[in-house]
Length: 290
Image (cartoon, rainbow, N blue to C red; front, side):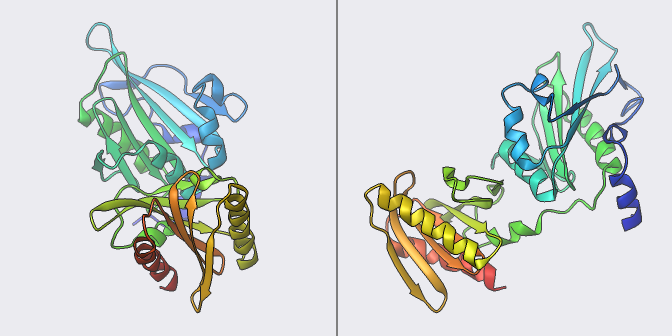
């Protein structure tokens, strides 16, 4: 069993130390010097996609290029390790690439693989492995490199506790995503989690927003009510012993039901009637009560 002191020691290592050298197998070797990127120059490496990483607290990227000399031309594998702001942030950026029908593997906290890439996250690190100079690589190659990196990274390889807020019976697995800002495309909906849920043969999106206080959550709801009012929509807002509940047509999402309890706001989009939203919101509220 690895001690917490070992985790702390690994966390303090330079990011490039987590990449295997001189290679990850006897056949695959580091071709050139490991390249490092920060917020100032990440765009030079992933131009057009760098902005996706910044809200998730991106700090640094270490990128290595491994080659297998056999064959003409030699084939390669690119290994990228992104250091993000937190475990939740690492999951969040990972969730932007994950698809529910992916082939999931037990790597880090969670990972998936296909013919040209493998991705996983562990602690506050997001790892992306990509084939280079060839359209696909054997799965064993990806897994060998990923295992070497995962063994070097801090741990333990656990998922964010915040994901438990979405663990309702109606949840469609592997659809959870985390947004550090502008959930559902609305600037007043700050950081939150969203996922797909299934009820009576239909799919909906359920979400949880966590504010810093109950007062902040109330202001968020008020901002949403003002928004729909300015859009010419009257929101149906009521209260009961469980707190505030709102059901309204939504300019972007057909119809939306949400409920506030303390610092939390839970909700469901794309509902046709209040009974659909009430059922799913009740499940979400049950997670808050546990």
